[in-house]
Amino acid sequence: MKITTLICTVGTSLFFPNLHNLDPLNYYKSESGTTDEIGQREGESLSACGLLQDRKKLGSILENTKKFYESQNWSQLAKQLVRLPPDLRLCGAEINSVEAMVRKKFLGTERNRLILLVSDTDDGNAIGSILKAYFEDRQCPIQFRNCECRAVTGLQDKVPLTFRTEGLTNLVRMLGEELRKWGNNFLGINATGGYKAQIALAVAFGQATHCPVFYKHERFDQIIHFPQVPFTIDLSLVGGNLKLWADLAESSSMLEKDMIDAQLIGNDELKEAIYPLLDDVEINGKIYFGLSALGMVYWEAFLTNNYDVTIKPANAEDRRGCHFRDDHYPIGFKEYVEKAYNTFPLLISECHSLPYLGQKGITKNRFYIKDGRIIGEYIDKDAFGGRFEIMTAATNELERKWVCKELTKGMA
Image 1 (cartoon, rainbow, N blue to C red):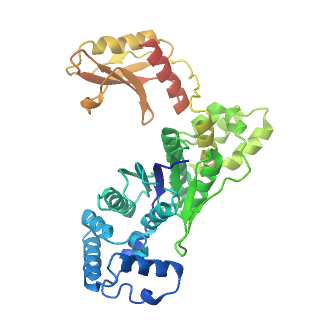
Image 2: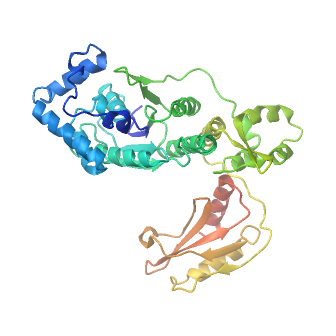
């Protein structure tokens, strides 16, 4: 296996305690005689690049690092970190762990893509921007060709309920999306940074999907590749009640107990198995259930093994026609939208035009899903394009995928 795309969970160790407690004048004076494994390696790395001998140069880098941290000049801070050996503890868990993966040859020279999953906080976004600039810098010794930074909605520690019901499930959802995009043979997960719960979920996700997961403890100069263990999860729990799982897997989806039980009538064994994989929340005196983070692991594992699965949605209950803004449209645009509407009378309830944004991205006629919405794109003979939204009775991603496939075939 050759990992060319790495997903890295991101914490705040770079800021707290590292840069927050940084004393440029006294840095490494106490560590220089240490006997622990990492301390010895830090001394060797500083010596190898001449910084241990040139205290003036080292001090200048550290003073600038502290200055840019305090002034929140993240791009210049990244440039200072690039001048330091990447295995210094000062550089933080993410840089340290990636360096260890390169040194231990878990990552080769073909490092195409690094995807940083940061917390839904100001510190998370700030550290993400620093790491993106760091890993894309041409002078970085562990550079990636491309680095993307994405905030995981709800992944914060101020509201525990949001962390549990949204943050962790969204983390697993994003892991699944990236795995299906790049494939097991080329993708790995570095779960070193971030909340401890992320490590457990990343390992569970890796075991369920056969995706390699790595972790580096801050006190040891070792990077761990979690081995695959000989156990499997019963994905028939998902396949046997696909619509229920698909509805529960929707972002921020919560269903009442009666609604869930209605889909499980006569299947007490399945009911007993599924409820431990759900989170319950009381809203206005009523109990609602949504997929827990572990339940989301089941769902993402099922999708990874059954990537093309779809569900036919219910028929549209009413027909509300096509609606267009008062604007200039591509030649044949309105006719194309109305053709789609009339070709699928049992499927489409309404179509309406969308504002002109990102016109250069429209290169052909197509249908796709974005943020839970079904979007159609049309381009005329002059390469002028337009978009429209299609309303249906689809309630989940698998039903929307079914709609897109039918539209693509029917409008070819």
